[in-house]
Structure formats: C-alpha cells, structure tokens
Amino acid sequence: MSNLYPRRWVEVVLGEYAHIKARIGWRGLSSSEYTENGPYLIAGTHIKGLSVDWGNCDHISEYRYDESQEIQLKEMDVVISKDGTIGRLGFIENMPGPATINGTMMLVRPNDDFFSKFIYYYLQGDSFQTLVKEKVSGSSVPHIFQRDMVSLKVPLPPLPEQQKIAVILTSVDEVIEKTQAQIDKLKDLKTAMMQELLLPSEKSGVGTKQGTGDGASYIPHSEFKDSPVGRIPKSWGCVQLESLLQSSKNSMRSGPFGSALLKHELVPNGHPYLGIDNVHIERFENKFKRYVTDEKFEQLKRYAVKENDVMITIMGTVGRSCVVPKGLGKALSSKHVWTMTFDQTKYISTLVCWQLNYSDWVKLQFKNESQGGVMESISSKTLKELWLPLPPIQEQNKINQVHNSLSEAVRSKEELLLKQQSLKKALMQDLLTGKVRVQVD
Image (tube, rainbow, N blue to C red):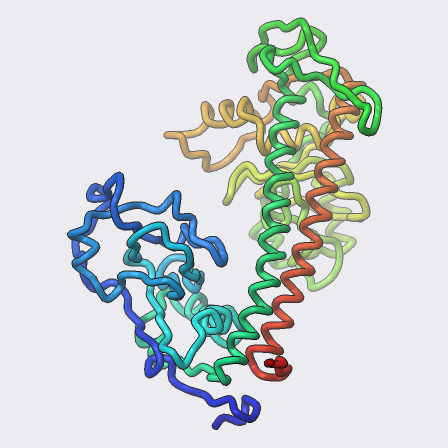
C-alpha cells in the first residue's frame, strides 16, 4: 500500500490490470487503401473529449480490420495518442459499427477491477500528464511507448468509489462541452455576420442594423457596383490599405532590424518588446518575455506601439492580426511584426483587423503575393497595396457595434469555460488522489 493514497486504496501497475496494445500489424497500410464504408479507423484528430467524431473517421476493409484483432475496439475502451500530439485521450461509447485505431494510437482496456472511465480521467490528471510533458520536452520526436503504459503505476480505489468519481467528473465534462458548443456557435455566427456586413452580397441583401433591441432591423443595400474585391454596395468605396493609414512617416513600421545587437540590451523589467508571441487572431497576449530600458525605448521610439494600432505577424505563423488594447503603456515592436496606425476617421481598427484575419479577398491577395502558395513573410508593399472595401464611417460604427457585441459574448463564454476547466482540474486533483473521498451509497 502506498502512502500516497488513503485507506482501502492500493497502488498497482496498469499493465497487470489492463489489455494495452498499439498497432503491430498492417505494415504498409496507406491512405490509398481507405474505403468508403467498413470498420472505422480512429486517429487522434477524431478524439473530441468524451466523444469520437465518427462522421470524419476513415474506413478500412474487413480484411485489414481482422488482421489486428488485438486493437479492435469495444465499448468502454480508452484510447490515447502515442505519436504526434501525444497524450490525447478518448473514451469509446456508442460505437456505430466495428472500429479500430490507426498507427498513432494505443488501446487501454482495463479489466473488471477498474471502472474504465476512472482510468480515462486518471490519465488526464497531473501524474500521467507530467510524463507526457517530459516526453514532449525530452525528445525531438515525442512518443509514448507501450512499455510506458504497461509499467505505469495507478491507484486502485474500491470499484464503487471509482464509479462515483467518474460520474462526478463526467457531469463536469458535460457542462464544459455544452459551454464549448455555445462558444463554437457564437464564433460561427460572428464570422457569418461580419462576412456579410463587411462584404454584403446582392443575393443576401444584408445591410446595417437600424434601431436597438428586439425591434432592430437590417436595411438592405439595394444598389451594387464592381470593385477590385468584387461587387460592393454603391455607397461604399474600395481603397488600398495605405490610404487609410494615419498621415505620419511611421504609420507602418516593423521593429529594429539590428535585433542581434538588441538581444544583448534586453532587460528583465522595463518596457515590453513585442513579438509574434503577443499577436494572435483577434487577441493581444499581454504576457511579456522581453523588455527594454527607458533609455533604449527613447532611442527606438519610432518603433513604438500604441493603443488601437493593428499588428500583424510577418514571420513564423504569418498573417495573425490583433488590435493593441488600451492600457499597454510604452512598448516597442520587434522585426517579426508590422504595426500600423490607422486614421480612425477613415477606418475603425477592429474592422481592419477582422479583414486581415478572416476575409476571403485579403487571403486571395496574400496568396497571389506568396511563393508557391506558401506565404513565408508579408512585405510592407503587399500590405500597403491590399484592396479593402470601405463602408461610410457611420456604417462602420454600426458594424463595429455588432462585432463588439458578438466578441463580448464569446469572451464571456470563454471566461466561463476557463472557470469550469479550472474547477475540473481541482476536482481531479482531489478525487483521483483520494485527498477528498466521495460518499458511496
């Protein structure tokens, strides 16, 4: 008995209590052998929390399925990704037909001493996930070996306690999944609304919102004209991005190109030196890793970043854009991003940001400038020459209200999701270690 666990809990080796197998057959299996129907083939990308995205699974022939009977799946099995994004866990329920796993996955089937879903949750806990992190950080090609799972030490509480713990954590997961579904629905709604409001089609006839509350309506655009980005409302303009910038020499800037020298001048505290890790799609990440002194900031203040500036990544993950929030204070832009200051009387920053992230016409223009369809960087020339539809500023303000309202709804749900996930993590730490015992009837 381990001192780590309470009375009546014992520590056991998982391999002595479970069937643990990865694919050893099917050598030479290729995607060309996938079939339209037949047994389901599960990969890590098909794992969606407690559920499996059966509709997007590949299929294989009965011959290939029968070739490796040791990994044919059953209800209540636990599956885990051992390659790629390692440690992703799935629980098999409501199988629509025969199913198996591909070469990136591993099967864990506990015996009757365990309640399968207890093992599913235990493997999500800190103990096993620490092993996963060690695998990721300790190897250029992370991999979970079958022996890692076979030799894994796990707690074995009385079966009724396992079942009760699983019921509690399942109920929390169901709440989390419901919140995530609401977020996904809101994001889809936001994308569809903004796409129509920033480039309304003649077919949809969508216009800007008039009035407030439930009685609000949309007045459709009735007349359209041709433009470099396609058909747009007759009352709109279509201009290149450069004409929307503030009329100053540094309205578009990348960071200091003498960055090799600057690295030696970074300090633990001071004014933030911003890079691609701060710029995400419609989200500014205010966790700072690099700083410069006040003296260095004054020397390089032509690269300063200000509130309402639009930033876009031009190296690494190219093309992510966000608006700089209020309260940033003094900060510098690195050479890995372009920072743009727009004339707010011409175009609202959040709408420009949305177009850079999502609009099809911007993506098409970027693609035309890329080499072989892969964009490795964005030049100032490419950005300045981007064509954008230009609604009248009054209409922009109304579109921006819709954007802000939907963005706030998404943010509110995402904050709720973080709280739910934090609750689950705390519960797992208490329940899966026996620190808090559940009451069993």
